[in-house]
Image (cartoon, rainbow, N blue to C red):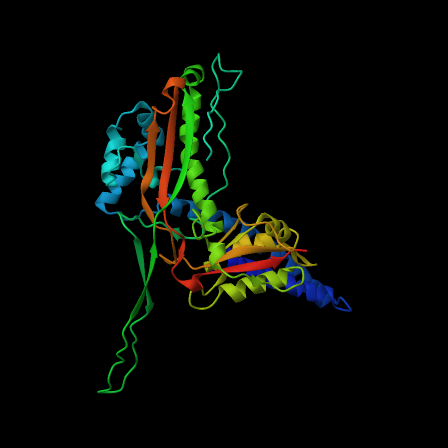
Length: 411
């Protein structure tokens, strides 16, 4: 348990005792002195908790920056090339009908990519009907400012721990050890148990995520920033679609088989959610002693309506701690996403991830994002089409006990 969490527990104990004193029929001198001392201790605990939260936030940020602690030589090389490479150079080479050079070419070779305009997914920063993208009609003649990008929702696949193993070719096969090799404490000369381990193999075929843009040569001459803006937007658009499919893919047609389509919601009662019922549900359906042993090992992804409700719920009449604040400080992660479906009959689902093991959840990918340049189809109109596509597989819940769908009744 983090220091801030321990201090939060201590603050709760102090507030509970203060509440007991306040409910006393007679406030004696002894109780009055104790209440004064409790208030002093609570101020100290609150100050220590604020300081602890700041230190923990700084440590978490430092841990993110140094996630690669002892990389292999090839990983160090890739990391260095990623810092020197730019998505825009890949798109510029595609539009210009040439191959990439320099760091980008070395990066392609480091990731063993075979297509001339294939981009490693690692290069993307957290960013179909064909239509010609026109240049703005005003403000393009003198020193135009950088284009404000389209705002996509933040990624949730990484938050939930969805791994993306790269598949060279063919059908993806993801093996999971489902029955472990048994062992026992034995008497002298006793036989050890001899039960065969069992594996389950999840398979997946490639599906396509794709987007495209079309530019006119005249518009690129009039408004040079249009190409840069579209270069930055198209990989973000594909990443956004990928994330949407992770949560809401229906598994039919071209859709991936997403998490909500595979899970069955556990309803948190029929009454409107309260502090107690929400925390009880998180603990009951999250801490199982196997995948998670404490609330700090849980990650909760809620919809916007549920998050708004959590900001209305206080611990008690004498404790003003919000439920959303408790989730942020006590859980291993708490996040809100607009990708969670709107409430149905006042019930909104949430995803509760248990632990942070590798390969609990996986979505295979085939190579990087491929860019296809088409300057022939509409050559007479002076238009160039650039299509980006990514091949991915369904989302697989490889360990069924590692994630749960919990539904909160909001009204």
